[in-house]
Amino acid sequence: SKRLLAMADKRLQYQQHSDEVKKLKAQMATMKEQAAALTEQLRRAVETKCDLVVAQTEMERIHEIQMMAKEDELVGLRKQAKNTADITAKLELKFMNDMNVLSGRINDMDRRHRNEILEKDYRIAQLEQQVSKMKTESVRARARGAAATTTFRKSRFLNPSPPSPRSNHEVDGDNGDDATKGYL
Image 1: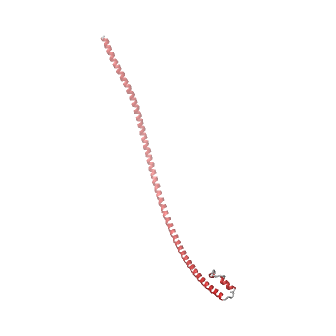
Image 2 (image 1 turned 180 degrees about the horizontal axis):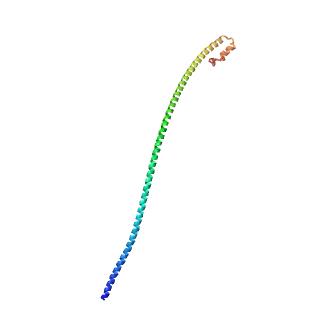
């Protein structure tokens, strides 16, 4: 029985060692799986990092190209702005010269117009004087004709002799004298 007990004791130790080995093998398997997962994760992280480095390098290259293009565009825009400013200055100068010429023409036309108006006003004043003079002469002629007609009528009533045909025409105003018309 000692022997049996010793064998049972060995068996128990063996079983414990066997359980520990199994346990350690299980832990090793789990750790290998974790190591494989971590290795895969590390590989993916390295690939991602490499992809990011490549992408950053590409972005920096694109940014540099864009900056050079913007610089070229900026130089072009500055030249265009300068050309536009030069053209605008020339057009403004031409416009001012044209305005100066037009202003001179307008002043000349205004002066000529004023002179024409003064000449016409002078002519109108002369014509008004002539009309006034003609009215005065017409009134005087009518007054003379009325006085002559009154004298003639008085003499006709005083001298009942028939008038001559010529004197009738003169009395009626057919002699062409406008001053005696309308008073008979």
